[in-house]
Length: 176
Image 1 (tube, helix red, strand yellow):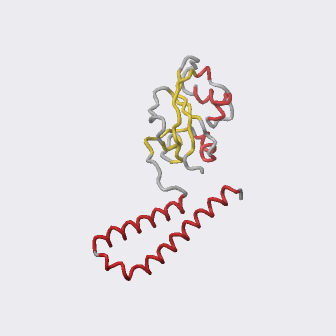
Image 2 (cartoon, rainbow, N blue to C red):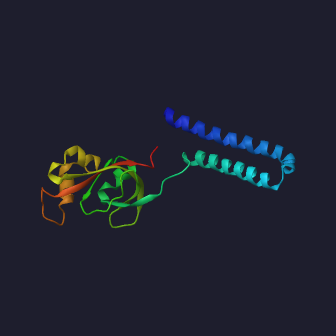
């Protein structure tokens, strides 16, 4: 295991230990807690319970909250392994594709199915001519190379080098 994984594991278990100590202290303080009255009991007890639940959630998932996805992006079946591995950092789509604004999170699905593969954060959106795409762009989009990407791009339609594509910079959200 690398140091980052060990550090995260130690922090998570440390947080769980802290919640355990807090709960035991709460039981000890519980006897004199009723002298404060019902309203302080409800607010302070609710606040302590909420804090404990937040710590448990953070220790189990590694984060306190997740942003909701604002849409879906359908990727080709050949891009599936790269999506699962978290190596897709670029999405290249036709100009008429509906994409959410930069900074939002989308669900990545396999084209033709509703199978949710991962969640991606859209970092930037730009337009580029298909003829101006490079080998590195195709590889970052999860293809073997530019030839494979262009073959898949022109599948079912005539090749037009003046066609404009949406190029999305992506970051896998599910990966640490």
